[in-house]
Length: 167
Image 1 (cartoon, rainbow, N blue to C red):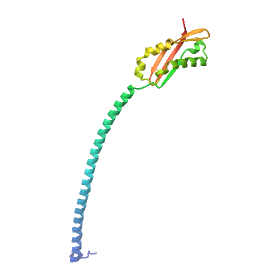
Image 2 (image 1 turned 135 degrees about the vertical axis):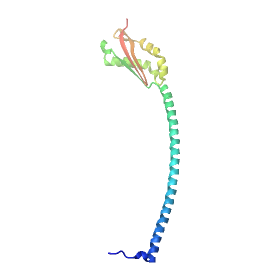
Image 3 (image 1 turned 60 degrees about the vertical axis):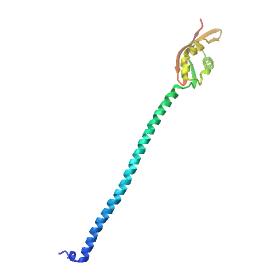
Image 4 (image 1 turned 90 degrees about the vertical axis):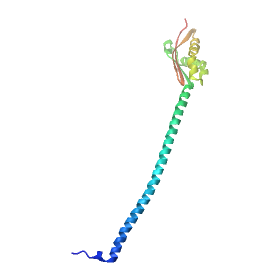
């Protein structure tokens, strides 16, 4: 079997020459278009890097400002609720109603502390203690006094008191 001698005919030679020249021209056009597109993409990427850098700087500034504001807000926390607990009411055989009434009377005395700054409350610790301990309760002919055993201070003011006979 033999390959036909088409390469010797001028029409086929022009066709192959045109195909080779067309391939070279199309390769050049492809490289030009690809270069233009890559240049656009590289400028977009550089712009996006700059935008990202600016946003990271802004985020850092906002986070620093946010932590400063949080610290200031924590310093200005206020009392939202007051909880009183009578720890040894069962020792004197008090009913739940009597224990709740004692707790409510103490809570009424300290009701002015709600919505006050925690700083001012902590500085007036002795005033709170004296307010509780100077209160005298009288039940069934017996006089009782209170003694503060625990004070926890946060947005909720939690106070534990003990009751004893007045000497």
